[in-house]
Length: 610
Image (cartoon, rainbow, N blue to C red; front, side, top):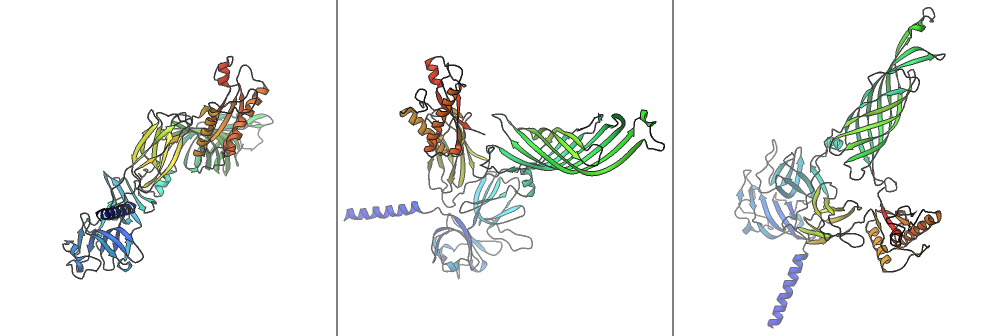
């Protein structure tokens, strides 16, 4: 009997403990009842017929503060020592709860503020409270311990606290229970959106050279532009997909003064003075490149512009030819014109990372109506100041499940080569999805291991990087706070490496079988499947004992193609694979020795970054 009793107790304990551990995290919400009562509660359970909640705090209207005529769902014994409010009502603040397991029927709930939480972080303060509203330069959240919020001309707001949207607040965001976020502060108004588009103003020296005989190019070839740019979404089918394309639009205004000889019967009989004032709308397509470890962006571009050209033209017959004029003929003329202009140029700009300026140079062809020539070569050389202030990147805060202690999750793993050897010194950066701000950083040790502690409640992006290797990223959804640890390993492949053990029969493109080549090829297949965005080139290399002949090159091509077909047969998309035969043009050892020839007779994998 004792044994069966202890067994029963153990079974009950196990069921209770299992139910407790399986229960979803409790989330703080605010309920409003038909009697005008505000309840700050944590849900225990909910069905169509009833909701069971734990009451953390309550605010009651004056008529109920004496404890008489309380609704049946409120246990009178828990609501007998109210704290009076200046508005005439009263409140109860639990430590941590006023009452446990209060059952509410659907008719007892008039309104439920369950849609969002307000997440705040400033000056070391970090809290989440049920969101109430936002207006102007502040956000409002439920805080039953706050004094009634008195608004001019409005009734006091009970249980609500105001938070200023200013520089003292690092970030404010609403978070619904599915994890969807909306940033309230920093601001994302029109000005900040404009700033994020990278506005700039530029000053250029912009000479134009007439296509005919040029006299004197006078001072005054100056111009400025006011521009803004927008990034073009990456298109996977484009060969430039690894780089960023941008469109930049703006207004270009310049001033040009030119002297030009005018010819009659092959003689320069007159001098023409031209003043041009083009006002052009321009559109520039830029291709942003970041070469290697250079701390700058180099952007080749194509620029098209169209607009209005204001011009004055003055001609004067040279003194030595004035005697040839007919009686009464004018020796000089002057006129003003307005015409259409168009130019197309190509060039490049350089923008250092540490300065908000860019240096640009371009040249092309300029045509317009209503002047002597109307056709010019045009150039731009100058500097642009990127004056826009990029809005503060909102720090994405984890969702803290209120009423339950926050769980800190340990993220750990290893960083290895495709052959399973450890990579030391790889940098790992954790970002919240949708944000560029780095939340955590770590580095792999001599064994390739890394670890970092993070708070759940966000979707994260984890990136592993090391110079000379292709980057690897993985998305880590951590909306739930149930887990305590998570393993995430990375395989980083060098940008170029040999497939150790992969070899061919002499003068043949037939693979030599064995454990070593099978292992190398299997590891490459696994790497490509885990990194579907990576494209590779398989390069075939021969022994390089002397000058290549066409037959040697063709053999290396067939060998590279054999490896490409093998990878494709294992499920790797053919669009990600290219092959090329290099013959003996790229030896890595002395091809005149047997050992060197063996090293040169290899298959290399090169990760394509273009």
